[in-house]
Length: 378
Image (cartoon, rainbow, N blue to C red; front, top):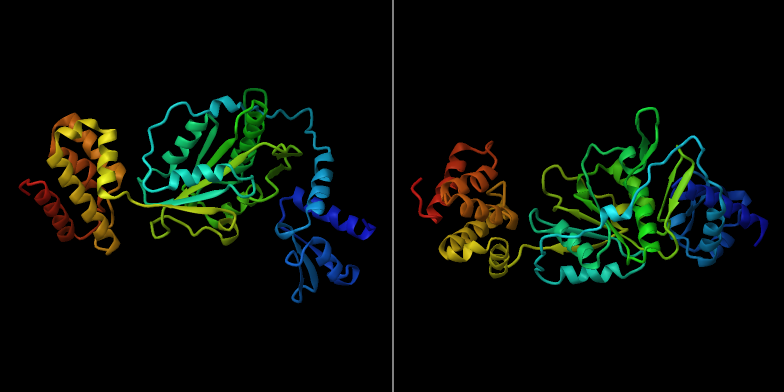
């Protein structure tokens, strides 16, 4: 390898340490065609605006170069100061022992299992579907079936870097470092591998709740780097060579309120599954599997499904603010069976779901239709 390329590799190495996605080089010092030959045609571009050569680290194609970079990377001494205590994590705390059964609508669960078998760069998967369709439950079922750890992160728009990476905390006279969920996932995956487990799942629930700036913090975990550098403690957390870490994410369709569009550079790191509402007959079976007592009330169950389907159709037509989900239907049944009070069940699990800010006349029409379906005087 020429000294010139060694210098470029060192620059790339330092960029990887800092979780950067590209490096820039002066035009006159490096022949662009030789750079393209070594790092890949798509990885090397010339920017007229900045009069610089840019190497996109995510598009480097040369496997030898990647190996050299990471061999050098793993040799860097990043031992934290003796004065810094990092709180340990234990993979056993994340093992899923029991979970409600997920009822597959089409073949989404089998697809998820298939992706788990892929390598770490290609097993990231984004699951999109309406609320209450069991997206997170499906992931938990896979973790339970495989008897592997599951780390679930409930995303929200107030999340900060310390949630992702970590922070110092006060514990009496000490100030240890508490790892964020990204290095925690790597530590758990490495421990699980050493314990002989098949892998680990990190699930980012409601990914669309993260604002774009926070989404950027995920990039280095979702491509070939699979690492997190924590400058506060001088340590990089990275997966062991054969450790498996599948990263899943769930989101509602983007037209839901309080959702952000997912950055293109982040979204491109995921394959995608769409979870649909189940057909009426299957949804009925799902409800009965969760609330078996409803087999004694087939008329109520049939009316409930009529109402559920009508709200979804009205929502798609922008006539209602809220479509009833399978979760709502199950909750109605549980309240009805427990209280034997159909009006209470309707009020608390159905009517109160609709936005009270709607026109009173419209809300009254919704209530009237609900009571009409169930044969109750409004």
